Length: 226
Image 1: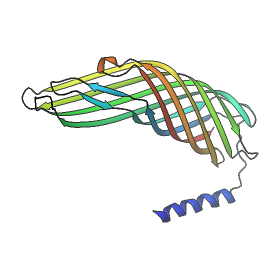
Image 2 (image 1 turned 120 degrees about the horizontal axis):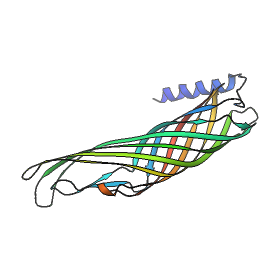
Image 3 (image 1 turned 135 degrees about the horizontal axis):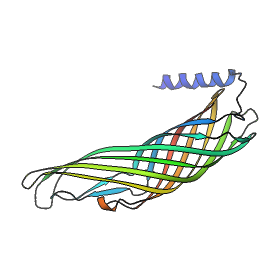
Image 4 (image 1 turned 135 degrees about the vertical axis):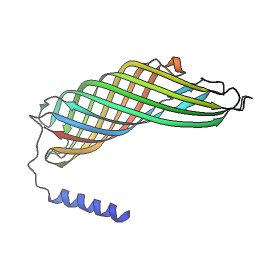
């Protein structure tokens, strides 16, 4: 493993030292960005009260996310600005097994799934830090629309046991803000890291959830100019 890391570092160093590109400044280009990361929500839990056994608290505070962003034709030279839109898909699957301690002695097995999709758009600004335009920082923000789908299948074995299904979907509106830094790896592509905060009002009260979601996400990013 160490040899692999050393080889990768050496390859990147050689690339940075020897690359001689005529860089695309994106003055006349749209950009598309790929996002891969994880979002951490503040206290996002759903209480499963179906069945005869003890209720279960299902934790959804951390979700993997994948998505993309697109920007309009930028205005400006090294400092650029314009409009952006983005989408993100988050998901999580869990299975919980426990023995009910409420006197029934039921063995409970719960399988859950949660899908989350948000569509956002707003304004952005980008600044190339160096004259060769190999490093840039950016930020953006605006409103968002969120859709969440939750499902659970609960199976109880023992006296009085049974099978129960729970389902809830909800829409919400909110806002987002994001920022990041990227490094050019070839003429029309940049790799980097980004962060995104979001807030949305989503009513999940029917399945024991909360009605407000606040989260912070971290991403690996790749941006290409077209």
